[in-house]
Amino acid sequence: MELERDAIERILATWPVARLATLAADGRPQLVPIAFAKSGGALWSPIDGKPKRGAELARVRNIRRDTRVCLLLDHYDPDWSQLWWLRIDGRAEIAAAAGPEALAAADALRAKYPAYASGVTPLFAGEPTLIRIAVEKRVGWRASAQGHVA
Amino acid sequence: MELERDAIERILATWPVARLATLAADGRPQLVPIAFAKSGGALWSPIDGKPKRGAELARVRNIRRDTRVCLLLDHYDPDWSQLWWLRIDGRAEIAAAAGPEALAAADALRAKYPAYASGVTPLFAGEPTLIRIAVEKRVGWRASAQGHVA
Image 1 (tube, chains in turn green, red):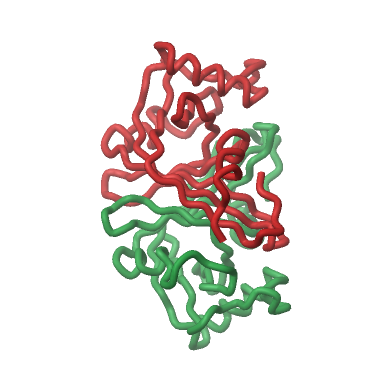
Image 2 (tube, helix red, strand yellow; image 1 turned 120 degrees about the horizontal axis):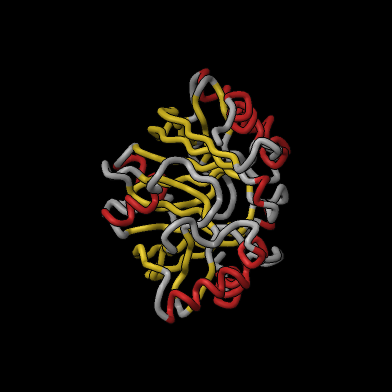
């Protein structure tokens, strides 16, 4: 069944992880888990200080080439009546973390994740950079009306 | 840091959920969470009896058009030293659940998921159908050597 609108808003406000699909140079989908926060109507994910594979991130290269992305926010539970997922189709851009919109997004990320607020994990690695995702479509599913969502 | 080979094998054998990216008709990535099992060197996911959105599944249509898929198996934890992910690039095909290879895969799915074994969730909805994913590349990451993986 469909996810209700208020459940979708709750997930976007509080769910701690999303899986991001970008498109590689050859058109293949490429996946990575990301931290994100909603701010000013868009979704934002930082290029943060967690240890990374390689120099410039594949997700950044991919988005510079093709802005089309898909995000999945979902809950796995051994009790399958509790399953739900929310799929976001969007357009991403790589943004310098400057200007009021991006600074508000950085604040939202610090408010959501204690590791960013405390600096245990730096919110930015090197040049402060954010992925900004404009939401084009939201599709939600839940296994049953009895399930708990976010 | 890299995921060790034995950690990768453990994840593929036991992790209960993967996020599957397929390619839509317009080349966009499209995501959905899936149940899967490893069997005979490939990964298998059933078109099962969980309630679904729409008649023929988007993932099935997409794979019939373009076999390139990406899978992400990962662990989210508020303690970011415990994070890990495993990305699989592969080629998928839609297979009738017949013949020894597919029947072994169906057995592996029932052995892994109690809901399939008990029939609470039918392993197949309608014509018994499996997605078979041939693994082409495995890329794994973990936040630290101290983390616990699967």
